[in-house]
Amino acid sequence: VQLQASGGGLVQPGESLRLSCVASGRVFSINGMGWYRQAPGKERELVALSTGSIRRYADSVKGRFTISRDNKSMLSLQMNSLEPEDTAVYYCNAVDGSQIYWGQGTQVTVSS
Image 1 (tube, rainbow, N blue to C red):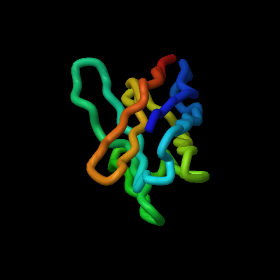
Image 2 (image 1 turned 45 degrees about the horizontal axis):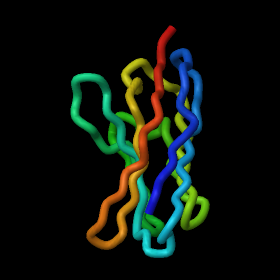
Image 3 (image 1 turned 135 degrees about the vertical axis):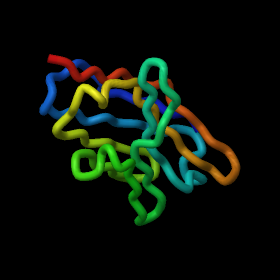
Image 4 (image 1 turned 60 degrees about the vertical axis):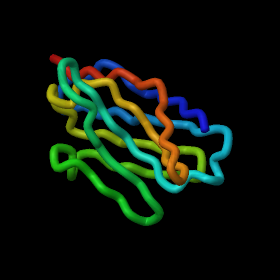
């Protein structure tokens, strides 16, 4: 499985961005997909997960971010009311049984 993330950029606080992740390869075997982020000097952390009908969010993004999986190969993250603390490289991932796959990351910078 290969993952390609896009949609990052530089925005001001309060603005919105939509990230997309396209999966290719053995997409039929993917059980779940998610978004993680890593800020400078910090560990990678979970942002949101989508597994079947279950959606799970980090407390810091609840009510502001929405994860959606349009089909087996497309994952999106709608990010509203962005804050400077959301600045990070965002990664999508996919789980296929015991295998975990990562995309290359897309930079999100929130700054005035």
